[in-house]
Length: 421
Image 1: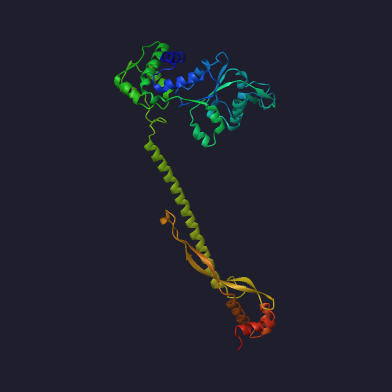
Image 2: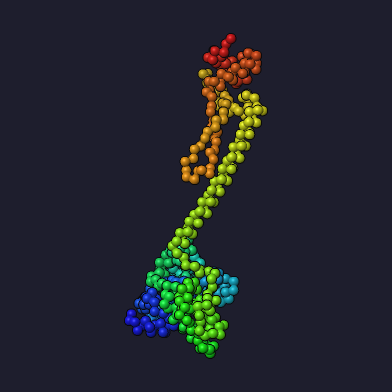
């Protein structure tokens, strides 16, 4: 696009500035205008994104068709589908009649969807269908309708992050982003700042019939060094404030400083170093949380060990060693004459250390767990027989009945374990 053509476009749409990045954005808008490709305009709030959909529309074959600009973030979620696609009478409370949506009334024209990143997910699915097939269905209807609308969308959100977080459909993002246009922030076009200030000061002076304000050289430098988180919109507001409030028409750096906020959101530049510090702080906080969880777990384990130890000590003091004691665990054996005998098995608590080799284990004490150690079945069987005989003063018939085996089997076991005497 020739230089004089760019200047004509800037004059027509009130765009001030000569920065190459700004010129590039205008050039892309002019090149894509004759096509029907979807356009996604991105940039910070206040950069003037609203001018570029009009450039696309006015230099397209649809320039004689309707043009509508819709702020998606200002329409309630419950009515956004009705606004965009229309509704049938009685489709919801308050729907007293049939209503046409923007996609129907903008047929053969251009629809500018500002703040498109604020659309709810169900509406995003409807929008994707319109973009891909030109078809839509009104709320409360089952009839498929057709439309021929050019969509230009804009957002100040980081769409890649929005997609990653599940806030915006990936397929819709790529469908809208057929041709991306990035509008540079004001801090990236510092040489344009004095030009914009002069334009806004002149407009304000003409509107309120007063002499325009001008800047000293040091004031111009201060103006250019400011970050301008609100971009062109903020610069315009501050210029108008100074024009109306200050009696002096020559603005020095000291006067200007009074109108430049020091604690505004987004004031400080975000450097790579600051990003790394932020990430490190976040990581440190997560690590502290992990430590706290581990310490809480360690405390719970320690309390549990104390309770178990107390129970075991009480059990050892208050129970005698017999088949019904809490220290006995029942196990079954089959004797030589195929008789099943219930045999108690004694368990002993043996402390065992657990070694932690994982990183950050310095703050975690070693735990102690208990493992079971069993006596051999023959030793248990021999001891049970001896105790049964002692309880019944050597009477084998009563001892066999107590053990649940036959007297013949008991006699054989007595001989086997050399208990005769």
